[in-house]
Structures are given as C-alpha cells and as structure tokens.
Length: 198
Image (cartoon, rainbow, N blue to C red; front, side):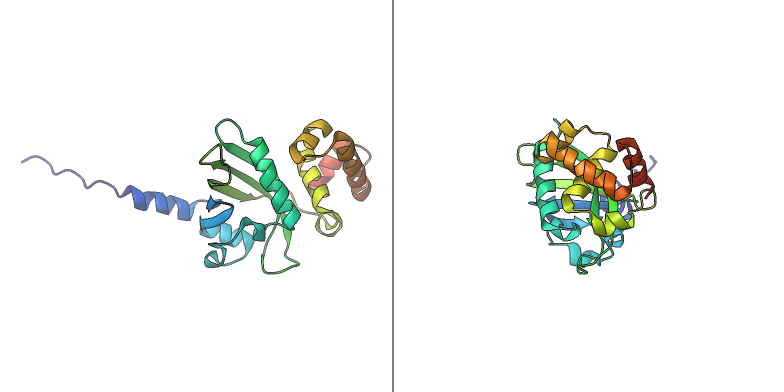
C-alpha cells in the first residue's frame, strides 16, 4: 500500500501567520490608507490595530506637512523596482497631539511603479533604542529640520538633500546651520554623531 500523501499546507494561513508575527511593523496600503497592519505596528505606535485600519498614514506623522512631503519624496525617489526606504521621525499615540516622536526606518514597495501610492507593502522598524530623540529633536526642531537631519544622518550632501526634498542646496545649508546651533555642534560629522547618540 503506497504511503499517503501529506496534506498540502495552507499557504494563505502561513502567509497570514508570517504577517501577524513579523518582528517589525507591516502595512498593506492603498492610496496612502492603511488597509491592514500587524500587531507589531500597532504596538510601535501605541494604538489598537483596529483603530489604524482604514486610517490615512497621516496619523503616524508629526505634521501634515511631513506627511505630504514624504509622499512626494517617495514618488520622486522610487528605484527601478518600485522600492523606497528612509529613516524618518514619526509620532506615537496618534490621538494624542503631544504624542512621543521617535526615529523609524520605513521601507517598502509600490505594487505599481507608475502609480506609487496606488497600493504598497511597507515595513516600519522602531529605531528609538539605537537613536534616541533628544529634547531639541522633540520640541525644538521644525518639520523641515527633522527631514534635513534624517538625510544628513544618511550621509547625503546638500545637493542630494535639496533634490530629495525639493529645496535648493543653499536652503539646505541654512537648515544645517540651524541644526548645528541647536545641537551645539561645530561640524556636520559632529552634528550627525549627536543626532545618532541622542
């Protein structure tokens, strides 16, 4: 008598389990709305998962301007495979206007390279244990200063930063000078070190 074949695994269930138990926050999106997310994302942002589903990504940002500019940056900087990644400052406890800000690594893929916000898969990793946000970062930086700081940490030049966020390299230098003053740093490498160390 031949051995019986093992039942085929339920791949739908396996993928769902992987999504639910992933060690980073995961989101399925459509037109910058959260279609589904896992519990890790909900815990990271300190809100019930059910309260995130159906919401705009905007609730996770410190300001409307940062939400809009990040959306524009994603469209401009997708690679040929439709992938995008950056480190940015986001906000916990979306319903709390004074919610804690924290560094977050966000990476993802647009399912349609020609319409980046149509649908996507995104991962969120909390960097706060490695990159704490100092008091100036929490209370004293503007939305644009936070964007410039994040790109300086990535090692980008003024020209690259300007192209990424749509401002002139000279304006980037002005923001860099403000950051140097606020963090009491004498050079850009010293500023980056202070931003990284918190």
